[in-house]
Picture: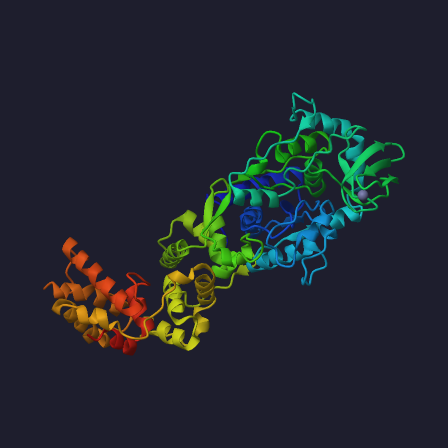
Length: 577
Ligand SMILES: [Zn+2]
């Protein structure tokens, strides 16, 4: 569906700006937007914003017609900085690889992938496919080791004095030693630290500090393969570069034919803006401070590479609420794959589409996901009946389809909270689940569980991976005879009224009327009467009694759903006083 140009959601506004800028800078060429991801470990769900922000803008541009390339730079030639904790198949022995490129580190034991970077890229690639993200992946290992950046590297080395002078504007000197201090990053919490570390080469050195002067290029050692190297001299004429390594190795190479090293991060990033002609590349708030790579990069690209800094909004942190420890499958880090296990791709896309990049938000792994799905279903209903507001319609459209087509949807999107309650009670038993789901709306029963999928599967994953065992619902196998025996006449009469009405009210709507109606009848009111404060107390008391008798607790899934799930026969057995 085409977006009208009068729409004013944030995606449309960036698309306007990016198209205009691209036509100014590179008329007739495809629009280029970019993201960068570092496969230094499991790619944090928070880093998905790095991809979704340009993706949504690129997709809007595609919908309008112009050709667009979304580059995802895999920063897999970055150094391996530390051994992440809790990764299956990885132990402390991986520490011996610190300093090597991520593509030269062995994959975790048991992996089918050739190296560390490929192992962690694979999960992200699968999630991006599920999310409908179309992109050109660029391996920086391939780029550097094939010599693709040869001219740019020689150029940067020739202009190392200029680069050093730009970096120096931002260096803060340590008063005691006179030595440059590195930029301090101050992540807000541990999760943010993880996200910041995944978003590029935060904290990497800028190439200063060598005795022989400043060099923006660092070779990986010819003996140990690590970057514990220091360039000691460089000759612009011959391109001969001499370096020594902490391992004791040293050699002289000719940079015009040498392909085993890379530009330092603060030079590498602006070099690639110029090389690829990037028009739009957002970055995390960790890159926004003075002296950060984005700010410094803007000067380096202009003064050294004769390029232009991309339009680069800073995006706010995306948090996670209630990620259960047990399901943080890889190293305690929630990944996009973890989110896609418990929610459908359109819902996850919607979270990014509806918030401006500078707005922080959280992705719910806890009970909040049920409310989120309710909100989504309300939005879908408004889209269907035409009462939706334009900005909400735009966010919805960006969630459910891309320029390439519709994303898979659940044919019968039953409420997520109902599905969750049902699979909670049935423990995923298919036949029982189908019976209950069909009884929700007997006039229009489900012919097979497939109609409720994939949403049903997501709800089932949520129950089994995120809801702690002590919060799961266990229906009593035998009646609570002590409690039944202790009931007064009123209690017994209310249960009798409920059982009497079961058959004639056996649907979600019918049982809702029945459970709220019984206390009204007991109070001598009409079943349609408006609730009074006294009535509300009576209803709460009645509901607590039903929960106790059915599941042995004071609360549980919504009662109509619970009754349907338990089944009429078993309800009679458990409630007969
Ligand atoms: Zn070495």
